[in-house]
Length: 284
Image (cartoon, rainbow, N blue to C red; front, side, top):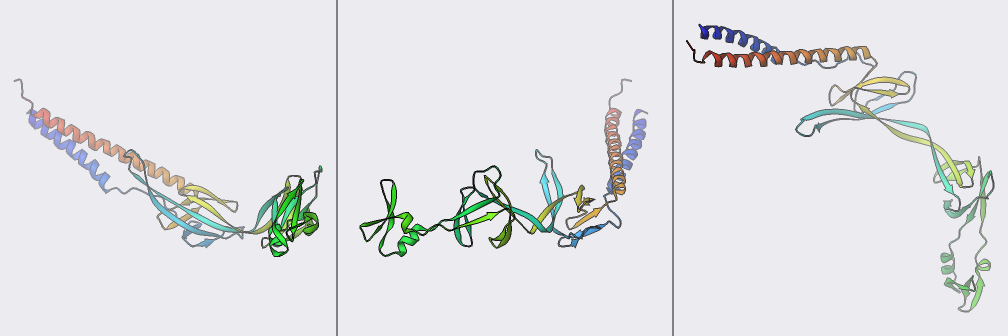
């Protein structure tokens, strides 16, 4: 009688456990998907958002496995990049006071007057003494110093002061608002301070925007949800309600799945216990 009751109970729990396990095995995990998203893009696609003329290009879509560490398995991580060109990006360069700059192929020393609010700077030409001396067959290739003064030696005996021998330094003035060519760019003197001269110019510049999966992305003032359904497609959508509803559905699915696993584990554990108890020796 004891074993007959155990068999009936074993069959009952086997049916319950098998049913729970079959539901787990046949159920498919729901995933996020969007019908008619604002943008469904592949690598290389170009697009722009409403109200903006700025063009964006999907420059890359990547799919990599990242290790969780300490035996935690791997996670598939998808991401991408957008590139766009700012046709009038602002660039600046500062010429420090007393520094050397090259303009139109000539080296100059930057000199700024020590006043409270300078508006201009003087560029003093720096000639190449060595090149001038080497070009003069009558002069030594190096200057000499006598009593603290520098001289050029002419014909191995005559000393000529460097101020007399070398040409006078040419100077040019640059003031705030002046424009000129510099390093193949048309630049403007934006500001002059005692510490230096700030130049500015405008030119195209390529910029990169990193796109993370299931994250907010703001481009040209518009916010989108970025989603990578696979390693080849980037979806941009503003349908946040659908996204939240699908996340809730997925969470509910996993809760149900975990519950079924619990039923299956408890059922099969009970079967083992019942079988073991059925074969225990009787006291009577």
